[in-house]
Length: 360
Image (cartoon, rainbow, N blue to C red; front, side):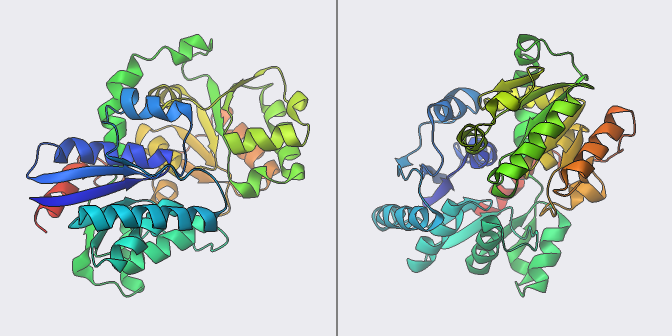
């Protein structure tokens, strides 16, 4: 029996591996999950066991925090022992986090084939660690699963053989489709006294936006101003929260803004589905909002998911917070962007990927 190890390291990875796990668990392969622990907090256990209906990971490396270099080294040392002991036939990695490239390098060192899910996505911005991770992982991967046609074009331009590239759709959308019935039963919107279709959801965590005090001050000023026009709920990422507290800015946030800790996947899906607008610097949220038809303003200068802008509901507003505010006001006043769902974002990406993996 062939043995496949899927690697998860950060929260978005869990939502992408869950649909694949459900397909492979009863198949003719041994499918194991390795959680590197790159991102971990107590709330993560709920995501794993309750929300996503996943088993305990077969391997937990417990890497924790640290610099990118420290995390990479720790993941490689720990995962090296797993590969030596388990001798897998294939390693599956997802996305663009540190664990993705670290485990890929270990696999290649042991002559184990690598399958990269979400291959070919490019922001063309090497100041982002994720961009370096994407490029390097694609360079050493054997199977390249792309979510949108820009990924295939990028990979071919970079010299990858077309027969190694598979356009399969988007696992994140598989999770949206699968878990939507649970999200529809969530009481989170009611719990926060929000009215469906009449509030703005905000998520901001990228260093470019939240590390510098002057940027944080601009963000807070913008949210305070927007809170006069719309209810706002702001689940604060630990990095953002840490910086707001460190710079003594917590009391500047208007009491009209609902501040919460990070929210579990099912409840967050319910918040996204019922929002009138989402302001974010996340990658995955750009995809989820495009599928859900929710207005999204991305506070970044670039995106590795161009299809969400080209045909979806996403607006790339840049990091000028005046422009972000201008775009937000226009949406709130009714100037919305009509979008369509990208090709193969139909909830069946996991089946396509599994069929290809089983043929290897």
